[in-house]
Length: 129
Image (cartoon, rainbow, N blue to C red; front, side, top):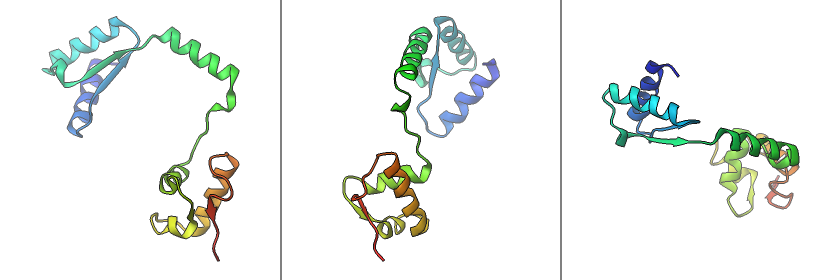
């Protein structure tokens, strides 16, 4: 990253009240970012930094990708919210729509999608007419 962008990103996130982390792949990059932030008057105690082993990450990613392409499930925002609302108990589409600004039909389609992804089973949500 360019020096100015590092400070800008830190400031923007710190002002929003976020805990700021920098993730880098080498001690050289860690030292560079620390130097930039120090020159901007930002103390090390105000942010965290992690060095990741890039080679290990790539090996792990390649191994996972090669061995099991089906291990990742992508969820839409509405699917994620619906799962959160379902929690550990069955619910009707009407119960879910009372907590979300979407139609009952949208929730029914979402439940069907979640069933196809094997994240809920057909008995988990009920359809009432």
